[in-house]
Image 1 (tube, each protein chain N blue to C red):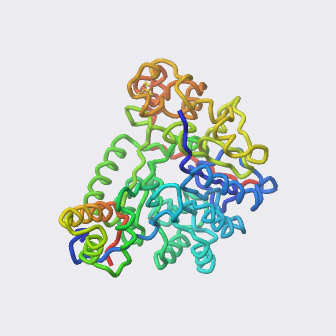
Image 2 (image 1 turned 60 degrees about the horizontal axis):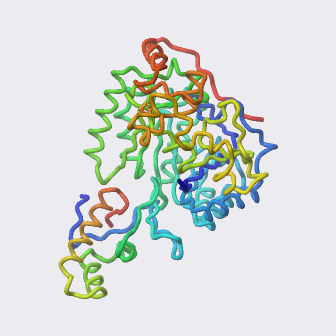
Image 3 (image 1 turned 90 degrees about the vertical axis):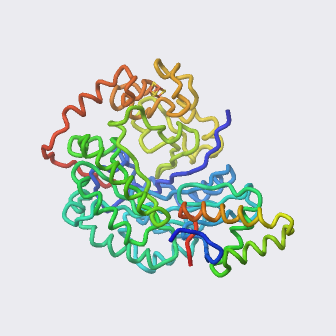
Length: 93
Length: 358
Ligand code: SF4
């Protein structure tokens, strides 16, 4: 149930949100504290709207960051989303 | 070394409709007539936000006892803080809950005293359990972070599995299972609250199994009773390192209990800017670095991990706030703990209930 695959549709769980734009650091605020959002992590989380599938998000990122790294973008996005899902920061829709 | 504050615990009032036998409030509580005003708190939240604080925990007493609570939530959000409300649920209704969520409340931590109504009401000294169940149902219907908090001790620990099962279907994302820590009112009731070693060991097994089973569905945070530990807890992650507590009248403390330590004067937000208090005030600096440490802490490798344990516990159990936490098996005073544990028995004690301030 907590597995994240290409067709998963995810969104932030209640009580979790990104720090507002302009905050001194990109953070994901959660009940226990905050997770640092490094590199493209913030962008990935921003794309989770409870409607897009993981596949669509990966395509969007590949489109944005260029396709030569397509495979890496896919594995890293899946890894991040899996970690966040296991931590209870994301929920499946 | 620079200490960056991450969390602010705001005890916005000591008033509370419950009388829990393990309340962490001080025995001497602050009166309503002396409480900070709405404007005072708003200024504090703004200062905290500017200092880089991320989280605001609104607690009490019962924070809902303040009629301006929604305004405080809104001000906290305006200061870019993550807002957590720590509540018994008493005083909540659908309208109020919606108002709090509209104001930007991120998260609610709802406390339960037990899973069975009789004992739950006994431990809180009120008939509040049934109401709490209704509050939990109300919260789960809304989109807000939701954690259940269950305080466990000798008289309810044998129902831990039922408590976790309740948490599982409550709609909460997290449950915090917290063994009582012996400060404030809990210290007065320690004889009746302290679990046996067998109970503690069993509770660890139950939590580990449940964590495995509920992975990704329900998070379980678990606080162990430090009397049974080998080394002390890294209390507050270090005195004046990451967290501060502001009491109802504006005194800034490093934790809930530090008011018991004689000779410390806590600076007030009524007289000083928060940044000065955090960086310069004598009380926040008193045990901040390692210069106060006695042997064996001074030369112990664990001192950067547990900071020599809890200063308040050291004072409460040895009379010296600058002693090694007696919970530590290396502490010269550790026998105090062994003696206390040696006396744990099933005898029933009369509870000392928390009294509400005027
Ligand atoms: S001796 Fe001091 S620093 Fe070492 S484990 Fe015990 S309390 Fe911690």
